[in-house]
Length: 80
Image (cartoon, rainbow, N blue to C red; front, side):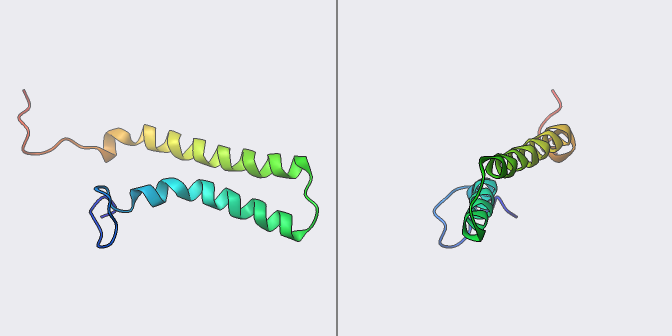
């Protein structure tokens, strides 16, 4: 699972920190590719950053909506 510890990663949650950094790294990569392809306008940068923010917002909303299904109660806990 993604939350289990991995060998060589000094973190109690395993690979989750890398997944949290992924949207920022993808956005940075897209901006670097645009900058290397030629002169970049402010409108293009705002479009890339706005798209990245929109995708992250959609992902957060989807996770919040499905949180009840994804985070089920433990079977061994008493209902009281």
